[in-house]
Image 1 (cartoon, one colour):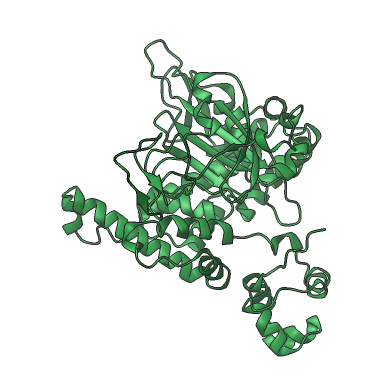
Image 2 (cartoon, helix red, strand yellow):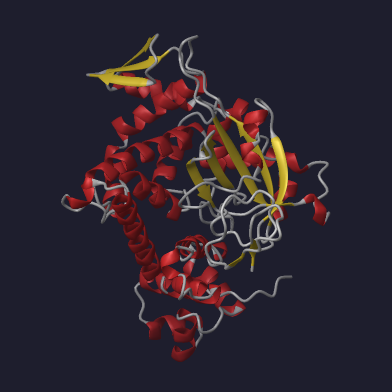
Amino acid sequence: MSTKKLYAGVKLRETRIRVGLTQKAFAERLGLSLPYLNQMENNHRPLSAAVVLALARDFGMDVTELAAGDAERIVSDMHEALADPVFADDRPPMTDLRLAASNAPAFARAFLELHRAYRQSHERLASLDEALGRDGAGLRASPWDEVRDFFHYCDNYIDAVDHAAERFATQGTPSADPVARATAELQARGVTIDYDDSAAIRSRAGATLTLSTRSAPPTQRFQILYQLALVTQDALLEATLDLARFQSDAARAIAKIGLANYFAGAALMPYRPFLAAAVEMRHDLERLADRFGASIEQVAHRLSTLQRPGAKGIPFFFVRVDQAGTITKRHSATRLQFARFGGACPLWNVYRAFETPGRFLRQLAETPDGVRYLCLARDVSKSGGAFNAPVRRYAIALGCEVSHAKGLVYADDLDLTKPRAYEPIGISCRICERPHCHQRSVPPLARKLRVDPDRRGILPYEIS
C-alpha cells in the first residue's frame, strides 16, 4: 500500500467554497481544529485518512480527484519555461515549482502567460515583425494556443457537454444509432443532408448540410453529429465559452468549433457505454472503432477524455504529430506532459509510425523522472479521395503508465518487469537532462557544457 502523503490544499479549499462554509464551520464538519484545517488548506500538512473519508461521506467528493488536477502539467510547463536562457542565473529548484503549482496555481498560470508573451515578443523582434508595433500585438497568446491550453487544463473533459451528448445518444432506444437519430433531428428542424463529390468536408448553405462523398464513413458520421451540436446545443456551447473567458473573438470562435467537435465525439461514443466497451475489449482500438462506427483516431482521442469524476477510465496521454514532428493535437491525463515549444523526443515510437503504415507499434518507455509507460503508435494518413488530391499524413500516439498496462490488449506478451525493455525518452531536448542520449539535437538549456577540442564522442560537448 502506498505511503505517499496527500497534499491537496487547493482541492480542499475549493470544496469548502463550493459548499459555502467558513473555515470554522468546515473544520467542525470535518472534526478538525481551525488551525489544523488552515494548515491543510495551505499544504503545510497532508490530508489525513479521516478527512478524506469525511469528504467522500459528507460532501460526495470523488476522492480520486484529490490526487489529480493541474499540478503535474503546471510543473512541467514551468520547468520548460524556466529553461529559457533569460532565467539562466536564477532558476528555482523543482521543489519550489511543485509548491507553486500546488499552493498558487493561478499565480503559476499567470507566470506561464507572461513567459509566453515574452517569448512571442522576442521572436517577433528577432524576425523584424512589424506586428509588434500594432495595437496589442505580442501581448496575448495566439488564439490557437489559447484554445489548446483551455482543453489541456480542463483535462480534455468538458462535463456539461459530455453529459448532454450522452443524454442525446442514449435517449429512447439504447441500441439506436446516434447518427440516425441526429439525421432525423436535423431533418425535423428543416436541415437537408446532401452529398457531393467535392473535397470539402462540409458546407452549409441556408438549410442544407452538404457532405463530401470522398470522406470516409466515420468522418461523414462525425460531421452530422457536429452539425447537430451547432443546431441544437448552441446555448450550452455559448454558456461554456462565457465561463472560459477567452481573450479574443478568434479564440472563442475556434473554441466553439472544438466544443462542437467534442459533442460529436461524445455522442458517437457516449461515455458510459464507451467506457464499458473499452474495459470489456481491453482498449482494442480496432474493435472499438468497429463497435461505434468511428475511426482509429476518434477512438484514441475519446479514450483520452474519459476523466469524468466518479467514473474515470484509464488515464491516457494522446498526441498527433505530422511528418515534420509538429504536435497538432496533445493531451495528457498522465504525468507525461508535452513540450509547449518545439518538437518532442525523436526516440518516441510515434515518429516511426510513418515507416510502417497500417500497423500498431508498441513501446515500453521511461522518462527522466523514472516513470514508465506503455506507448502505442500508428499512422493515420487521410486520403483526399481522388488521384490528384493531396494525402494528409499524421501519426497518433496513445499511452498510459505501466501500472494500467494489464488493462490493454497491447500489453500482452510484453515483459513489463524487465528494466532493459524500457527505452529512455524525454519531453524535448531543450529541457531533457539525460547526459548520454545518442539522439540529442540541442544541449539542455538548464545545464552547463564542457567542450574539449581534443576529445570527441557522439556529441561535440559533454553535459556537466
